[in-house]
Image (cartoon, rainbow, N blue to C red; front, side, top):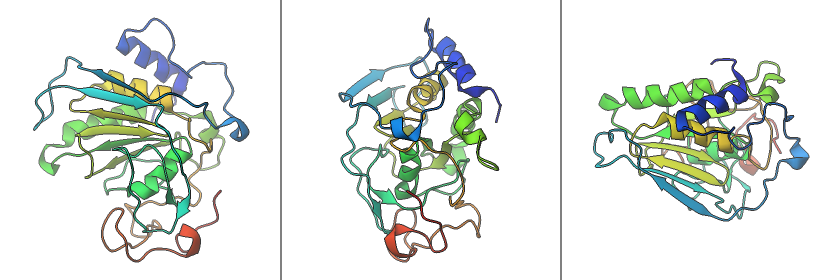
Length: 256
């Protein structure tokens, strides 16, 4: 990841989108949000659809980007690890979730939605994709570029050994579109690769969860055999098996 900071990422996204001013929430002098001020102000639900000049991905008929914001989240409780949760948006934009969360990195294995919603609660952005393994290289490369260019969150860099930013990249077989992103109360879906709009979404909605915190201590790396992932038996988000009481994986420390 580049240590460019979100201010530089916002400038890049602004230039790519042809905007004259800085993106929302991207001021260079504003301090990190304190946890006591992390709860975002209520917003009205809004859906914005655009049709960028980019070729549709295989299996799609047009290039269409849909951004939904102000999505109400009525519950954000911890449920038992491996308990399935039904979400009202695709990808999820908040809701009940497991007591464990994923490390902030690019994953090759599919992160369960009930796990990455906990990342969203911490103010993370999840970059997700659904594509055939034989034709996925371009999609993964584009999302990885957006992830790398959005690095260096000051709150994360203060954590010894922590990640550079609260960003998770994962395959998600339950998506309706080949490209998606999620934040607390907001979703991005696309049938094509439009890095400008995706970078704008990351810039606008990063750090907007009800818990403005960063750190991998106690987080799970599902790509590693010893990464702390629960054994749920039925694949991502499936029931059966799991961790200890209260929705925590066995051996995981308590987390607010």
